[in-house]
Structure formats: C-alpha cells, structure tokens
Image (cartoon, rainbow, N blue to C red; front, side):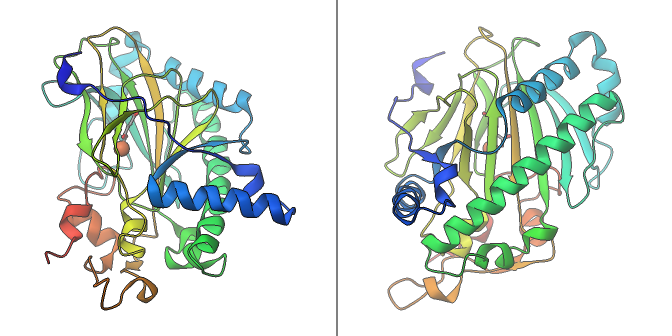
Length: 314
Ligand SMILES: O=C(O)CCC(=O)C(=O)O
Ligand SMILES: [Fe+2]
C-alpha cells in the first residue's frame, strides 16, 4: 500500500448491546450515554454482547467464503446486471476504481437469495432476521438518546417495511487487484449499516476531525455505521461518515457482510422539526427513500453516496 492511503489507529468506541436495553437503570443510563457519545462524536462504533451467537457469524462467513469459490465463478455470473430492478446482483471488479467481487441482495421486506446452494439462503435468512432485531434495539436506544419515545425512529422510518440491501464482499487476492482501492470513498444511505467480517484489514473511515481511521473490529463484534438518513432525520446532529476499503497489494483475502438498513421505500424522510430552528436551519431536502436512492443516479440495489444530492446549499 502506498503512503497515499495511510490511516491512524485512533480508538473507535465499543458499545455493549446487552446493557442498552437492560433492566438495571444505572447500567442502562451509562450504556446509553456511551452510545450518545459514540453517535455524536464518531458516527460509528463496535457493538459487542449482541444477540447473534459467534457460531452463527462463523457459519455465515464460511458459507459466503464457499459461495465465492473461484471454481464456481460461472454459476455466479447469472446474477450479473440485467436491469435496474435486479433483486440479486453479482459483479467482479478489478480496475483502478474498485477491486472486489460482490453479491448484493435485497434482504427486506422480502429476502432474495441465490437459489443455489440452498444452505446459503437458510444461513442468510437466519442472519438477517437476527440482525434486524438488533437494529430495532438500536433504534429504540437511539430514539431515547435523541429525547424521543423509544418507537420514534422505528415509526419515522417505517422500519417494519424497511428496505434492506445486503452486500457480501470478497476482496483480493481471489482475483488480482489492479489498484489499491477495494471500494472508493462513499457514504451509505439508510438508518444504520451493520458490518461483520472474517479478518481485519483495509476498511478505513474518515472521522469528524478529518482523519482516516483504520477499523479493527474485535472478534465477533459488529461494526455499526450511522447512515445518511439518520443524518437527514437529525438535521446533521448524527452524521454518516465517508469510508473506503484499501486492498493492500493482494496480500490478504477478506470477506465482509454489509447490510444497509433503510426506511421503507415510500417513506418521506425530512429533518425532524425538533432539530430545526433559527440557529440550525434545515440542511437537507425532504424526499422519499426511493427518490433519494434514485437521486444518487443509482437504482435500488446499487446505493452509495446519496447524501450530497440531498444537502441544501446554504
Ligand atoms: O467491506 C467493507 O469493509 C466495507 C464495504 C462497504 O463500505 C459497503 O459495502 O458499503
Ligand atoms: Fe459502505
């Protein structure tokens, strides 16, 4: 890796999920305060003591690793882009701008998974169900931290019909990289992004302070990144952050499983009035989630960096 992509090892906050919703008032308040700090001062954090067993994560990552077997690549090509309404999309990029193989699926309101192998669809289904429960738990905790009723975010995003896209990424050297970039700089739409991986290495997030930070996720923890639409809802109080993946000269293969947990496609998202006043004018245009994905020039399954299109120029 050239010096161009150097990042620092600043600590990223760790949040204990089990304490956020526990019955002990003192422990819960302390955990909620740590979450508030992580959301306000960082916008991303590691979630530990969550409800997905280590074994489930191991099985998910192993199943995806098997799926990406180089020998069966032709079977995956059936999911190459056909049109803007694809529910499953596969691609292998090895160029200056991006170096990864990926399988993206629409995971909610209906889940779409490759029909073969059947074991993979079962694993993914189970994983998504469990991850959604955690995301609902986070929505309750974050709602409380913002001074709202605990169902506030769930309702504001109509999360029960939320639009979730899951990306399974495989980084070189499964295929030879043509540059240092695994995924170029971007933010992700939605409420939050969840990420699990098999090994550390390559993911970098641009902090509030303008420093690139290396992400080192503790074993079996989940990286949570706040999404663009939480930034919009809070009128910028909670921010989503630019991130990228650097692939380090084909030294190490890495798998990540990234889910963008979004509002329902027809939900109109606009800064909540509680965050708008004379000192904090409205910073984002209101639009439906579907419109904001389209404003990005992409389609529903290819969703990245939508925020710039929605920011009001002041
Ligand atoms: O693979 C990673 O570490 C990050 C992937 C990512 O940012 C994405 O899929 O949106
Ligand atoms: Fe991302």
